[in-house]
Image (cartoon, rainbow, N blue to C red; front, side, top):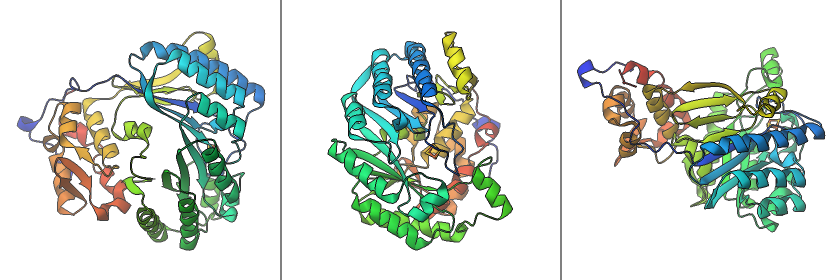
Length: 405
Ligand code: SF4
């Protein structure tokens, strides 16, 4: 499937037509109350003093990073960790620093991740006052037995009360994360969680498969046979049922794992899926600026030290080649219901999508896994549950099709 193009057909790739100005910022807040059994994110259970010094370092990083920002930010996403573990005063400091150093578009989407039980009326008021207009709440499941099995510290009713509290504080844009494929989870458990979530009437739902990551307690328990997962067939059924129930309840399935009421798509995440540039701040965060992907250092002490020295805390960075950029556009863009628009591809990469990936696309069209809808190449209905198999077909192809950087 990955045959190289005839050299005479090889297109020259250029990013000249693409607007490389980042208008988005991801900010990582690496603290949690405790560590969930499946989590491999950069996060720490840290004393209050540690959080305070991190906030100071983040303010310094904003100052350094903002010198590169030439346009107002359209989206900002505070992820973690649990950003709402910060006190009201610390949240106010971070949000004030953001506005001091960066211009924000009037309509900017500013999202903050929150865990159930870490929100109160005072924090919500600070968030709202300082421009946060979207919350993403980590509910995961509405079954208390499963929450315990995941190592979560909240109960199902806390998620629902957090959603209500946020609504009372005036937040209209709320996402709740849901997980499925959990240890000993049944299809009925999934249906009950989706029903509970639908009745809370949130704008957006992210529904993810549990992935067992190396180095986590779950990985150890899986290896020893102590972790019993539902298995591929049942997980596939769970995904189909989640899609069916959410679509019947008025949610558009606009990305492999994401559902939104009309107009409620996550603008920040669309930047990632459309392979557009973005800044990143915070320990262990990843950014993509001027064709370069960078990753910040992962150790808190080193992060703070480098900023105290007036240096950007970058651990490593690398140029994304033209071929890799094309692959990223396909693998990320095909996750979206809107698919990859061939005109947009040309504007982004200066090359014809069919010429670059024709040998990969044809067999997938023939197998009924991809289809053209006007200028957009999209997953077919039957391909949604096995999207990863389609995305994998594009890995390494940009390098073997003779693209010129
Ligand atoms: S709350 Fe989220 S970031 Fe924190 S430990 Fe759990 S999964 Fe990881």
